[in-house]
Image (cartoon, rainbow, N blue to C red; front, side, top):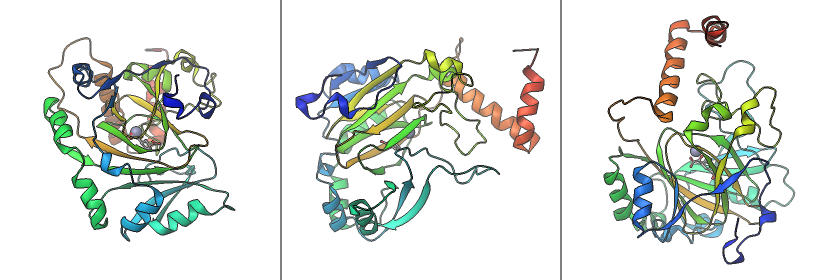
Length: 324
Ligand SMILES: O=C(O)C(=O)[C@H]1CC[C@@H](C(=O)O)C1
Ligand SMILES: [Zn+2]
């Protein structure tokens, strides 16, 4: 992967032994960018100026202007920040990280504390508690461009702008989301690896009832190929995002993020939109339709059985010796 203007070098990236092909990179004026978005394929867009007013959002600026609201900050004993839904916690589940609430200056002090043993990741939807200067920066995002994308692709409403402040080395393990996303890098460097929905069977997402719903069960650093044998077929599409880059991250595409080693703090903002309504069903079903259908089936069975421990038994009864 070629480092742009020597901003980073390959030794700042974690190494994985699956193939990683480059993601398409387009200028915002290149019609190819709109084409790929229409086809729900990922593309890195350069020059959109989507969040150029946030490129100055470093820790000091934010500490001064972000206001005294509380922020969700994940605290981890390792570099891994595997999301879990705290409304789905099941007995025997141990959250892999702590979800804390802090005002920004507490987060600032935690990051600056040289003797700390924990790693931190601030992940907070931007809300009306932010200070007036942040509101000015927010209003000056390139809403004209992104609203055009929303309209062109018949997306639903913008649901949230998640402010992401990560420190060097942090990893967001592989998962998928059900919304369309323009992931916008304000500053710092992040490497992203994407996998199309068709690789669902290689990535073994947790069951829908599990707190790690939508997250891959496979530990990319030490994949258990006995439990997850198809993982060895996985093929990724990756790139490094720098300041001002915008990644169109289609719904249901699996993705993994890492903040480059020795690259300091990285600030990003997501733009999540409700996906367009599913078009008329044609056969064979698309991978996204199959994923949505599998999710609905799992939910229906859990609804019928009430107890998630019965779901495993039910599936085995239904499939063993009959379908597999
Ligand atoms: O935008 C998304 O869909 C995400 O998964 C974000 C959650 C943490 C972010 C990261 O850069 O590590 C990526
Ligand atoms: Zn995500």
